[in-house]
Every structure is written in C-alpha cells, then in structure tokens.
Image (cartoon, rainbow, N blue to C red; front, side, top):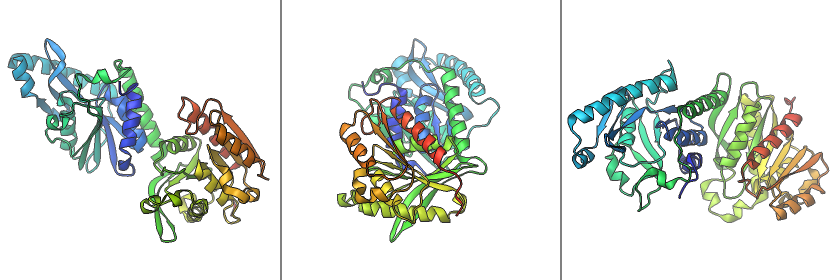
Length: 434
C-alpha cells in the first residue's frame, strides 16, 4: 500500500505541487473520491476549490471498467480501445450515457446549488483525482477546464499506471503523479482505506474550502505574495492580514525549510482564524541555501528577520499592528536573537521545537514574553529549552506536548501547537502605538 487514505494522499500531493503556490490557481476535484484529495491540495496551495463534474461511462457488465466519460459543457470522451475490446454496441453506450448524464445534472445541483462554477478563465487549473485507471474521466475534466478558458492545465493524481502519459493523450499541459507502480490493476489497491466517498463529504469539503478562502481573501483583508529586501537579497514571502487583525506574526522557519513549510502554514491558518495576520518569508535565497553554513548562521538569519520587521512596519496593511515572532527549530534561535535587538520590539515570541540555545548570550536581553513549545518525545531539545529558559529574564513559559517528536508529525500535536501559539499571541499582542 502507498497511501493510508485520500487525505494523506492529498497532503503528499499538495507538497509536490507547492511550486504552484502564489500563482493564480484553481483546484478542481473529480467527484466523488477526488474531492477529498483536491481539498488537501487546495489547502496546501491556498487556492479556491471547485468540483469538475465528470461521470465515467462504465461497461454495462463491468461498470468499474471505463469505456469513456462525459462532463459539463457537453464534453464527451470515448475510449475506442475499451469499446473494441468489450464489444459494447452503440445502443448500449447511448443508454449508459443517458443515465450518467442525468446523474451529472443531479450532482451539479447538489454540490453547487444555484452558484456558478469557479471561473478558471486565464488561470492555472489543477485537476485532481484519487488516481487514474483508464484516464477517460481525467481527460474529460481537462477538456472541461480547457473549454472554460484555463490558461494552463495541470493534472495531478497520487497513483496511476506507468503508461498514464500515453493514456491521457496530451489533454493536460503538465502531469504530476506520486506513484506509477508496475503492478497497477486498480486505484483502490494502493490505499489502505478506499471507502466510497459520500455526497455529504464532497459538500463538506467544498463548504470548508469556500469558508477558508473567503476568510483569508475576503473584503478588507490582505493575502498576497511580497518581496522583502535585506541588503542585496530579495526574499520571497506571503503576507496575510485578515480584516480587523489585532497583530501580525512573522515566521522564521527552520533549516531545510521555506515559507511554504506545511507545518508553519498550518499554524498560520490557525492564527488567521483568531484574527492575527502572518508573514511567511524565506530567510535565504536559493543560492544562499546551497551553502549549509548560511543555514546555521543564526546572526545572518536574525538579521533577515529584523529587516522583515522593518519592512512590516512600513507596510500600510500592517500600520498600527503589534508584531510577534514565531520560530521553528533554528528559526526559533533567529527569532530570539532578533528579539534581543532594541529595534525589534516584538510583542511576543513563540518557539516550536526550537533551538533557543543557539541564540547564546543574547537570551538574557530578550524582553518579549516568550513561549517555548517542545515535544515530549524530543528529549534532547527539551533539555536545551529548559536550560535556555533559565537564562531568559522576561516572562516565559515552557509547554511540553505529550508524545510529540521534533517535527510534531503525530496526530493532534500540531493542532496543540497552534492552540498554544494562538492563545499566547492573543494574550500578549495588542495594537501597537508607535
């Protein structure tokens, strides 16, 4: 087995597609099983989610075998190879098509109601399913996106046969697949849990995605790609400030990570729901990351965070808001190093699985209230945090998350980090008066 369930497959696929984050993307899930996968991808890319309504035309006596597919806007794809191999007559094909067309219309009403489809005109359409077998439904979905004016089409699936590029016939501009096993027989064989997705789950995924997207990009809010200058370096970032935000948190990621870190984005989205803005940005350029010495140069990383702080204070969207720091791993050391600088004046600092010991003698100069969050199953880092806390002369607290390892990958542990960070920032960040 390659995937525990569709949610895990979607998260892994989202990580593979992170290079699309920040572009004008719409994620289209194929009902029903493709929608939970697509919801995770949309979340990873911070993109709107919609369904791409397609129905497989199953062989009458072997319905799991697709002889074609139909979709919205009159799209129709027929697999002549399957038709020849099964001997299905034109009359049988017509009956199956008529039945599936009725289901298609019913599903459109159920999933969208009276709302129109999300526009893909001039945008990148990422078409997602839980896997590809014959490829008919995927091809139909790509043709629908093309007919609606998508500038670029990316077909992304967790698993497919090794010859899936041949099967898709060039309907997508780009193909992304996590696994192409030799022993492919059916999509379901590569999932531990491949239970049928019900309509209620599809509508729930669409509803959650719509709520998330409205919240982060609604009227009066900011959600955009930015560039932070630090000396000669130009650092990419994303600034998100919900309407009515009470503060903004700058994230300092750990070694080997970036502004696209799924763990930091998870925490950031929790802060957005609590009315806090975030700046996720790259501490190093791609060229600088190639030198491992830069990755552990805490003074350099802290300097970048200070430059980002100055940049934030000059941003009209952030004017008057308190600024906090959230650091992970080595990024936590950079956050504390920067917090000790008199020009920084952060309202609060949160460290997740951090290495505050790397901030060295500067710990004693930190005045911002500091929360240290460490996994209970990360004993070495836990001890380093205990020692570092003893050197802090500011308000501080050490929180241990039971069962969590260094990356907080265990179920529920990152949610606990998010709750702790949210409450700490909410308690200590009031609008600044500068």
